[in-house]
Image 1 (tube, rainbow, N blue to C red):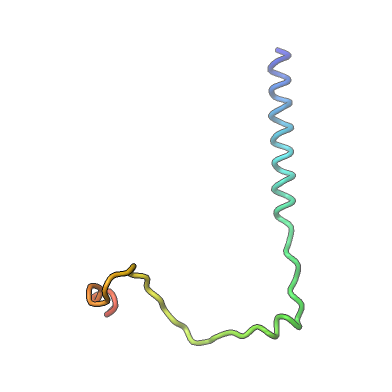
Image 2 (cartoon, rainbow, N blue to C red; image 1 turned 90 degrees about the vertical axis):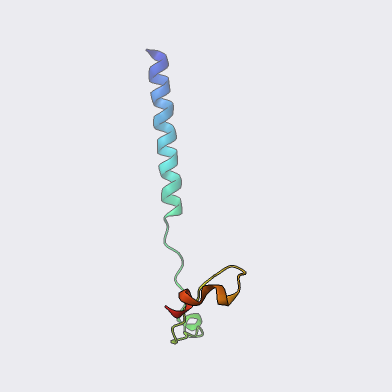
Length: 66
């Protein structure tokens, strides 16, 4: 009976410590200052890429036609 209580106490302590670690990881990141944000450029042209391995393009003509 004492062994069960000690085991439950250990499990409860381990659970509480794991929650503390999760809470520490969930902190919000530092905001980016406006001066740095304005220096970023955004490319408005949408592009699509397909990875076909190292194969020849002629082997994938049906995929590329889509």
